[in-house]
Length: 380
Image (cartoon, rainbow, N blue to C red):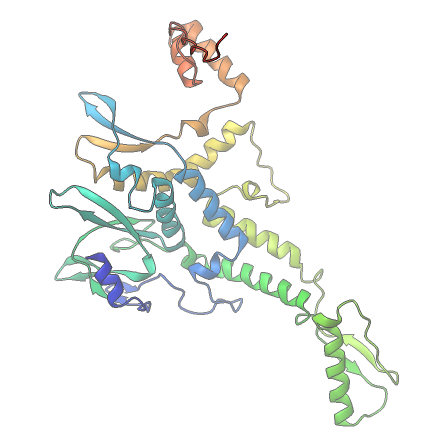
């Protein structure tokens, strides 16, 4: 079913109108800095690529558990096969990574649910959000893949939403001006070192010169300053002088602009501490007492909103009363000394059992039998 829809119009990528406006999968014009910003171009900016990569890798590699309600208790339950391997060629980590990239760049993730004749889930296929639109027909929500109504079951995970909208807001679209500024600074730096972006200026001659001589002098100067002649001094004859008409990189605060743009994208678009990506932030007084507090802050602010959305979407596919949870305990573990001190306090006051503390440290219980050594195969 899905293959036929995708093959029928595989090249269709144009924007399609919806009752609330134009689908925001792609940018709708140039930014103030003169750059076109799309999901693809945004990922060329290291601040975007690094932020998406950090959030995606940290969530998709978390352990996943399935639980079921038994009275007022939650008991661990076996995972279904489709949660271990959602598609025939994607394990859960890669599958979850695709969902997160879609959410972080377009604000929406679409998953086609394939079931067998017994109504059991066979595959959960992630779709490119740029090929999916959402529309209303007679008040009913429909999903269109490459412009064709998709008749099957679709899971739609949404990011932040406008009231009354059926789709999530695209972070890249709403941050396109800041991302465009970062791309423009990146482009300027590349052109400068290539020779095309060298300081603009004029050649002044003390005496009138023929137009042909002026044009040839300008072309020679340009050739000397381009990539092939980098490091070679320019030579002007007959008292001619070079006067720059632009601003230097220092005057334009080129490096400061790139640093500020990267920190703004990491901190205000993806809610990450810029220092997590190696981006220095001058003048900040933000400090963390230890690694545990730093990880807890990242989990609560940057990761948890996406974790909850994916948990709810997957849990809705499980038969009640089962549900799926990411195991985030690893983020909240302190250093060894802090953990042991906490266990000691708990054991002393009677609300933590010694074996419970040992289990959290992946140690066998105190009363566990010793392993029986294997018999040696070496004869005497």
